[in-house]
Length: 232
View (cartoon, rainbow, N blue to C red):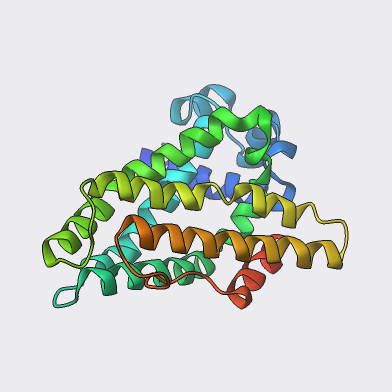
């Protein structure tokens, strides 16, 4: 009797699920390729059929996460009958809920090693992938705001890139929280994160030609809830 062979995409998705579970349990840098192979029960040659390297597997995980986030957020960004600022704020607020609902804080904790200097190239690739996916959505939204007379910028795409860059730059603040040696240091690190996010909000307002405080940002309670799941 012939053994049933799973379709390639189903087997690939299973491998991603198994790898993510292992990363969540041990952390990215603490899982070798051989351990991945042992956990997934797949020969090295077959693994390379799906992913040419461990880094390629991480990129695939990030792509899957980004695709799911975009699918969840697109209805908010594209909501008909609402102004561009309302849609932007709705998307920014919903992105937090999506991250919490999909376990993004735990995934960030598992992948904190990607913030380290020796993984800088891979981290940059992941950031670029997210930015490429969300760029058209943000560009269109900001262009709509310019047409409405709500936003004032000559480069909607560039503004969208800057907004995404603000989010990517928070990695240092997150690392300070994760590496905090005690509760007092953690509170101070969270305070620094709140301050930096407030700055990013003001910067976003100004590059969009809006009054300060027009775009929503995470508050301290939300940040504390997220980092509690990153570094319990």
